[in-house]
Amino acid sequence: MALPQVVATPVGADQVIFEGPKQGCDGNDIPDAPLRAYRLADGRIAAFGLHYDNRRLTGTSLASLKIECPVVFRGTGDADPAKLDDRIWIVAVHTEDGRRIEALGHAEYHAESHPGRCAYKDQLKCRWVSVIGLRSADGGAHFERVGPVAVPGLKAEDEVGRHRGFFNPTNIITHKGAQHFMVAQTGWTGQPYGVCLFRREGGGWRAWDGQGFNTRFPSPYDPAFKPQGACKPLGPFLLVPGSITRHQASGLWLALFPGTKGSSDMRGGALPASGFYLAASRDLITWSDPTLVMETPLLGESPCGLPSVAAYPSLIDERAEGRNFDTVGDVASLSFTRITAKGCDLIHERRIVLKRVRITVLQAQ
Image (cartoon, rainbow, N blue to C red; front, top):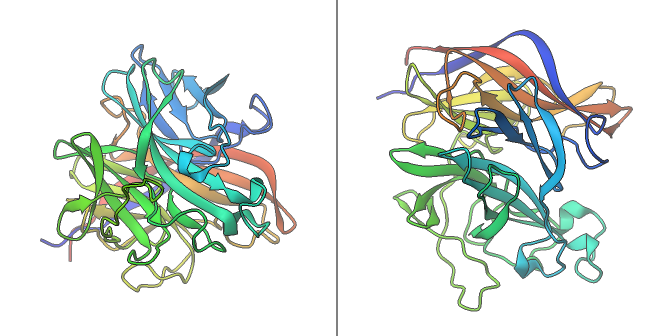
């Protein structure tokens, strides 16, 4: 059965809900990840989406979110990459009761900041990234480590000179009774780069390999490490989706993702403009052709002469049922970060913005 295309049309003005670092607790409180919201046991909304000194935002609505200054989780800056405990961002949260929270951490090892670990000064050439599990028993006021979820099949000292690993997991969603998330990976020997899908199997996570969820990604620093195979990249994503949500009326999964003008998606098609795109799926494996939601210069493109660039999109419906904001109606909010540019540089000024969008499902051709 052919997949319909889904169009999300922006309406109305931008609404700024957080300005960092102006409204933060210290200089590190800048938006640096997609907004991840969940509903607490008392009915309030909590959210993450800031820096690696992880602080929680709370409020009675998205527009009223305010930062709480206690740090709920922070990596220790450990110089040993095997510890997966250098800089860690809380990037996905999931709860059934508003108290017990499961989370994913984007764990970056910055070899350039540890003497003797990297010959380059450019952090991108030294960076090695994994996904770890986190949990909270108090609604997200404190988190503790659970263990590795996805660790690249090469060590931090291998193939230095480029960005390596798994990065920027999406939100956690439930499909056919099982939890899933998508994550980007840079590729290495035996693993083509792209966006991969993970499903929770019992107590662990396994990735789609083209036939089933058969592939694990344990740490290569584990003495018992053996390569487990590869995950199969999914199209049309060249960059990882900022969010995955289910459209209530159609039952389709909607993936919102950034794409730069002229870049090829995983099917070989060139995107017509830089901005945020939407693709639809019934099974999280096969996706529709993308449709442009909002044209905008993106983080990673030259900011010369521009007032700002955009990053970290997510789709969220404040009226969604459940605690994880993983469904949307026909009207929702596009959340993203505006990063201020000055000349050809990006400055330390970022805003979380909401823009209303209307969602329309087009008939399959």
